[in-house]
Length: 470
Image (cartoon, rainbow, N blue to C red; front, side):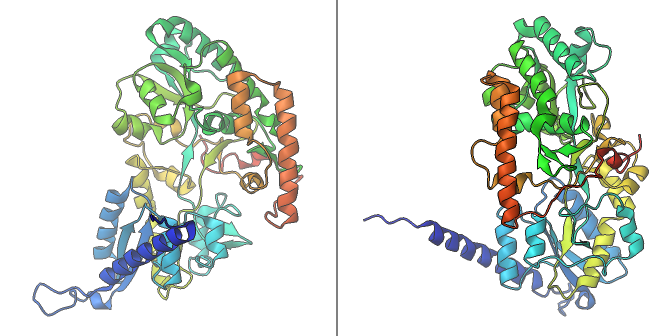
């Protein structure tokens, strides 16, 4: 009779395999190396402090390995760093490594609050100087890089959101500049479609196969248009109010009604969308600062495209444009090499390294001192994504934790249905979402799952200028 493993057995087997890989990797990295003269050792390397550094980032691993190699041969603190890229099963590998006392000295922070709660991360306040930490004023956020007043990690790069558009299609439609208001975006999409539909060209697209088809344009436009809210959460009242997305949802619904939305948007994923844009078949869509790299390598294109600030109801930015940025790396709380780890972090955050990193197009920094020093990046199309005074990292909202208690459909799914089908009024949809999300929030608070409360003094405009001044 054929037998199958249960979920617990499968999980245990996975952890056993991961543990074996971790222990094998650690044993290999700790094995002594021999000199070329056969005497053993590593030309004095036995006197070096050897650090292990784990990351899950693959896109920059060649560049970072090159920089770490240079650091190993040039630093005067006798530190030697071994970097391991562990993109697969990273969280499980880290969990097993901590359980077996084989955790890396420095590692990528992938789940900030969980890592702090489990005791994985050492506070950086005593490891790094106040002068060094002062460079991060304005970009350290509670529950993102700090917790209860202590700094456990630091930010690095972020995703900056813009409206991408086909310049030639926009000019052909009679627009000398890209739309600034949502009404102008709707009108431009309509004209582009009228002129190009016979050739399979449509004015607007979004990847509505999942909720991000709504959240990509909505989070950016809605937060830019609101001085109080983000992710449907009003910081001043401490309650959810998804009316902040009414204007952008109605604009996207009108684009659909006008026939200006690319056919099949309801099942469209992001890569097929990008492929269509690269072929000149889409007039506009919303996405983040990773797109220039996509059109340089994954979907190379010769079309004349650019990017601009996200349109809002009035064309003004009353709040700030959401930047998706989190923690970068941290120091192992159990490591006996924390002082050396702190010096390595100082190297990773050196102006020269981070400046070059940005100029090579590997990522856009959220650090003011980096953006002040960096020149124009080499990557085509990246210019429009560079930080402005309107871009900002927002305080954490209770959205994710509330959705663990939510009954019924998520807000993004309800808005998506409205945009694609118009099966209920926007007011009814918003009222329903607000009622269910605030009930879920109350449950989360009663169980002690979130301590985020109302902040009557909150003003999103106060975030402006924290990342850039242009």
